Every structure is written in structure tokens, then in C-alpha cells.
Length: 515
Image (cartoon, rainbow, N blue to C red; front, side, top):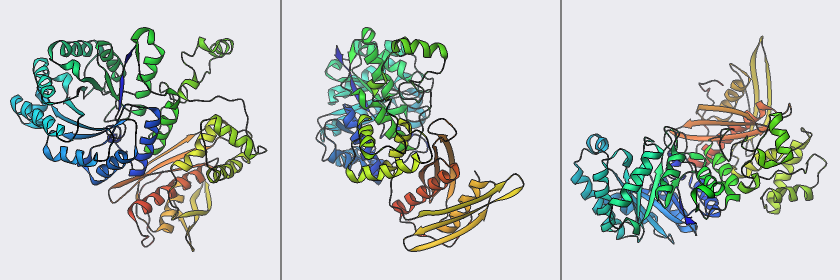
């Protein structure tokens, strides 16, 4: 079978998802997992965009081995120099430069004529080759470009030294058959294109990103650019997990393979969801909560007789573990450790002890602990930040004829602060009390509550997003009590703010915004 190269752009295009802002350490954590997944390329960032992007790209380039490390650059000397500097310590540096080639982009965005765009593209690739042996050129908005001009500019950049040619469907405009014909046209019309990786990068504006990517691969593309969970601008990018599992499951149709370790797909998806604060929809293909769930009686009957009646792939193939081992408050550390090993987690003794304490606390409130409960508990290790504030006490009074009132006690080192507040509802009251106790002015941008598992004693997970000084911070909290979970999430977001901005408490204030 022919080999398909996986170019992961979660940390670059995926981070451009509205509302996402990853720290350097969070990007490194995702990059480490992508290396375990064995993607071929990790696009680490857009170094010239910000000091943080430069720092994260440089950190990934210095630490991560295995995949090539790519940095994005517009077709300008400044961008290319920044990308090269950020990739200085990479074992396999890849400079990815781009310029738009469609009439609408050249006229309205670039305000340049086609011959000027051609010259900029040639000069950018030649300049990038002075810093790296591996250079990718992307013709932005390729699917709305004139095919003849597109072929000419791709031929020119290949002659200038490009080793990878990317044909992006930047605005998700094309269709599978049209994209297939475009790729075939370029293969037939561009001299020496066979010497390069022929790459595709599809957006999901019409819900066709994965279908378009697969059609391009059938037409002869050799590299596909995608993101974990389909993150990205607007409606997102082609989903890595969907493309990889489509190729693995339908080898009879595609005859293509990747080197992705598919058993790491679920872990990678879960990590990205946790660190970005973007939940995976339950009916998401491959990694959604319902992807391997069966509720219909007919489906259940067929599945119990033969799983293949309703599952075209196994949950184990993506790293999901469905065990009959039931954990409860009487379980010991040994059973807990073995269960985590079965789920693919290998913790140090200190990490295990911390996780076990949280497990016992939850087991006192629930009769049985499911795999998803354990996944939720382990999230706390992934999102931990120094606790400048510790939620010590919370009391709420509320009712349909009572003004919701909350009393909160926060610890900041040796300092104990207790405040009370009223609100439009119990959670609003809690947040106003926390604001007064912390003395930090923020704006609550979003609040989301979901049940990790089913049942009346379900573990509730709250995700909040706050804004301060133009920066967003995501906080998460879990408890069988949704008010406690809400308070934990808010305090966690404040701790992130203090840690990343070095914010100091101000005089007590009240916050606008309700839950």
C-alpha cells in the first residue's frame, strides 16, 4: 500500500479556533502526545505572530524528536527569518511559507497582480531554502484560483526549491469530485511535481473537509494536513482521527496507510479537548462519547451477539478500554493502579497517591466509578496550576422565593478571606463572593456544565472562560455538587490568571455578568 504523510496543524491552525489560547507548556504537552501518535509533521506555530508563538515553536523544536517540526511564514523575509530562528534547534526543521493565489485574494487582500504574487512566492521559497532543506509552499485559496495560474506558480516554486506543495481548500469551498479533478490536473500539468510531497489542507465550511481530503488522496496527493478533533478557523479543519481511521478501516477502497499509532487517538483527542477547553460533541465520529455507545434495543441485541453488526472498528483500536472491572470505595490502591494501567495511564507514586485520594473522595459519593469518571479525575493533573487561591468553604442559600446568597472562604497562603454576596442565582452569587474575596476584576465570558456520567449521582464538570486585560483563561472543576464544581472552575481560572499574568489582588469588587 502507498504511504500517506500526516501533517498535524493542531498547534497552528487549530489554535486559531476562536476562544483558544494555549500556553507554551500546554503546547508542549500536546506536541509530546502528537509525537507518541507518530504524526509525520507537527506545525508548531506562526513564530512572527507573537512572542508567545515564537517561544512555543522554539520549545517544541528543541524538545520533540521524531516528527518534522514546521513553522508558518508569510512570503516575506521577516516572517521567514522568524520561522528559521524558532526552528534553530529542530532535528528536522520545515519552513512553511504561503501566499494567496485566487483572484479575489490577490485583488482585495494582497492588492497585487498575479506576476507580483508569482515573484513573491519564488523569492520566499528561495529565501527559506537558505535556512532549511525542507520547505513547503501553500497556495492559499487554491481551490478558487485559476487552474492555469496555479499550475504555473507551483512549477515556479518547485524550481525555486520547494520540497512540499500544498493545495489548500482555505474556505471549504470545493467538493470531492472537483478537488479530485484539480489534484489530477496539477499532477498532469506541473513539471517535477512528483519530486515533492503533494499536500492537501481542507476546511470544513460545507462539512466536506474529510471527504475532500480523501478524494484528493485517491487522486494522488501524498500528504494530508489536519487537526485533532477537527479544530480550526470557522467550521474547523479536516479531522485527523476521521481521516486516519477511514484509511485504516477501508483499506479495500483506498489502499493507503499511515504510520499513526491509532491506539493513541482517543488519548490525544481527550488531551486536546482538556487543554483547549473545546468539548468534543457526543456524536463526533471516532472520538465522540457516543461513537461506541448503543442504546436502541435492536442495536444492543445485535451487538451482544456479534459486535461487528454495529461497530465497524473496535474501541480498542483508538485506545478506548471497556473493562468490566468495577471500582468503588472499597477498592484498594492495587486495583486502582491496575485499572489505570489498563486504561493506558502510568503514574508516578506521587501522582498515583494524589489521584487515589480524589478517587476515594468521589467513591464515597458514588456507588460505582466508570472509566469516564476516572478520565475526568485525571484531567486535574493535566490542568493543574499553582494554587494562589484555595477554595476552603462555600455555603449557598437559594430558593424560588429567596434572594440567592453565597458565603465563600478563600485561602491565599496564610491569609484567610471570607466574603458574602447576592446574585441572580446561586452560582452567580458564588462568583460574586469569590470576586470580592479574590479582589481581582474579571469578566465571565462563558459557562458550561456537563455530566461526565449518567445517573443521579453523576460527576458534574464545569468549564468557565474568564477575561482579564484582554487575555482569556479557562478553568475547570468537577464534583457531584454542581455548585461546588462551578466554584472550583472559577477559582481554577483565577489561579491560571495569577500564574500567567502575575496578577495581584486589588480591593474587593463586584463583577458584571450572570450565570
